[in-house]
Structures are given as structure tokens and as C-alpha cells.
Length: 165
Image (cartoon, rainbow, N blue to C red; front, top):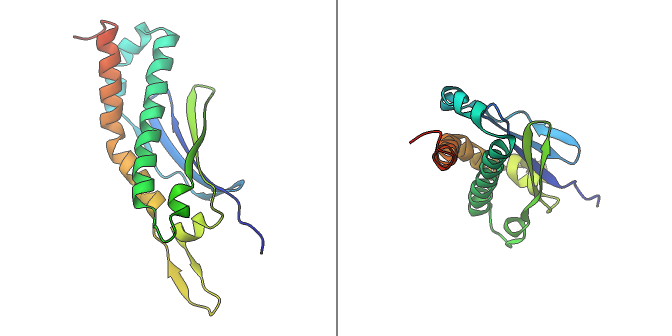
């Protein structure tokens, strides 16, 4: 039996306030851009960002991607089905890196059947097992809370730097 490729989820935070997520199975993108949120408050505080050094911007983006990854992993692990525990235990952060102005986190599940459990699959006798959509749920959750994560991190950093009271 041929092993299926590792499932990878890329969550990125861009300097313009956009949070994006994509899902890949091996090298092939299997889920289109799941969400692409621009935070309105980001545009309102752009003046403050102009005053920030590159180091300050990098600190905000690093905190944002770390908070996003931690939230995503917490929710995806909590919602991953647990027949044997192997699928649930196979989640992890592969790496965080900067590409251009974006900070990207590569989150992986090393179990070869992760995408089949996520999206559903055919059975040997021609039936169908419904997907469990635990990754989609985690991405939807991250979209819902990313605004508050961003606000909290940015406001705290701006207060530290004396840009707001």
C-alpha cells in the first residue's frame, strides 16, 4: 500500500493585517484559500506602524503568528477524532519562517490518512465515510478570533512603545 503524503496547513500573517490559511496534501493544494481577513483597525493604526521600527513590526508579526499557531493547534487537536490517538498525537509545528513581508507557519499532521479523515473517503465495498472537518473547524475558529488576537497584541505593543495610551 502506498503511503499518502503528509498534510500541511500554512497559516500566514502579512504586514497589512491579512491572515491566510491554505491546506496541502504533499505538494498539491487541496483546499483553496480558506480565509483572508483584513483587520479594519489595522488600517486605522497604520500611522503608528509608520513610527515603528522594523524590529517592532517584526515583534508584532512574530507574536501574531505564534498566537495564531497556538490557537490553531489547540483547537485542531481538541477536535481531531480519537480512535487510537495516533491522528490526534501527530499534529505539530514544522517551522515558522519569514517570506517577503509575510510570516508563515507550517503545521503538519504526519499520519498519512489525515486528509481522508478530514474530507471523507470511499470504502472498499463502495460506501462513503463522511469527513470530520476538524481542520476546517480550527481554521474557522482562527478566523473568528484572529481580530481579537491582533488587537490585543498590537495594542499591547503600541502601549509599550508609547504610541498610544
